[in-house]
Image (cartoon, rainbow, N blue to C red; front, side, top):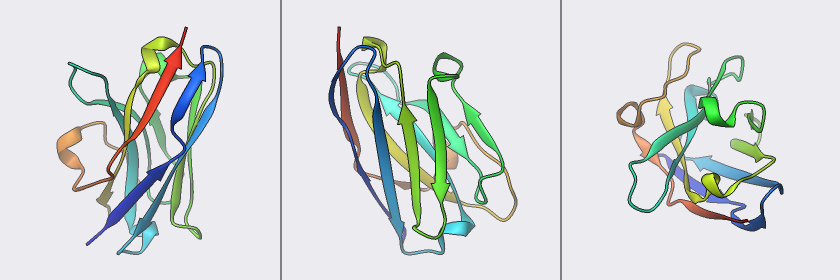
Length: 126
């Protein structure tokens, strides 16, 4: 069973930065494609960024392109989300997600991910 543990959330002022981390266990990390999603109060969970199992392909929500960067370190079984130029619109609980993958690729769909972390709160004050 894959377990995902996020960290790095917190309260930051608008324009600031945060880096989220997600450590995986239970399966060889290089066989997992990973993604970050977020859910604001009263809204559906939405895709933020994804990275393929070897890290060669990334995909982003349009509103975070140029501000957020997803990366991974397979040796550390960790995926990161560097978030810069944060705005109040980025306030949400951020979830790490993973899915078993046999080829390089990403997915933006919540339903395609079998494994989820517990979430970490990101709050941006204006």
